[in-house]
Length: 198
Image (cartoon, rainbow, N blue to C red):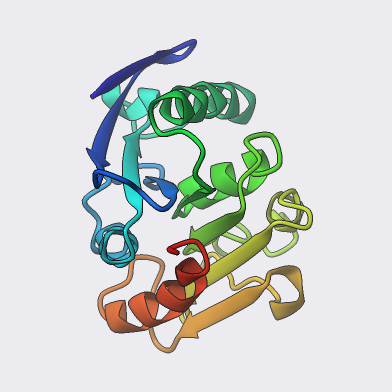
């Protein structure tokens, strides 16, 4: 499915039950795709609970670029994408999330889209080796909306402080792109999503 935005078209992989309990909108990291195993793990957990899941390929990736460019333009396009999806899947709770750069977008826009919660996979707290260039404020942009963070214990992009999210789950020994620990991801997001599954 394609959604036109001010930044160009976005492509959506939509899994939708007949009567979804909630809508989960997920997106990729800077150079990645929506078929990353951690994203698919979260998708499967949501589908098992009766949710609809939209995996968004953002316009810059559809255009063949690896870098997202302006955060302002990226967020504007995201708001347009979510608004379009909300017209298609109405009157259900909205949760959003992503991995790495996608987690940043989900946190920055959570209040604007009235999300009930955010799932942040491999939230990049700072560039590798530059902890002084923190992105903590982006995590806090979600305000009172619950954010669940899942990061690898060896992530060079850092690990958010437990006080800055509803839950920070660390998978020991894992880098920025998880190689194992997908059962931990499922075990973390499933009980959290269950509250919207009834």
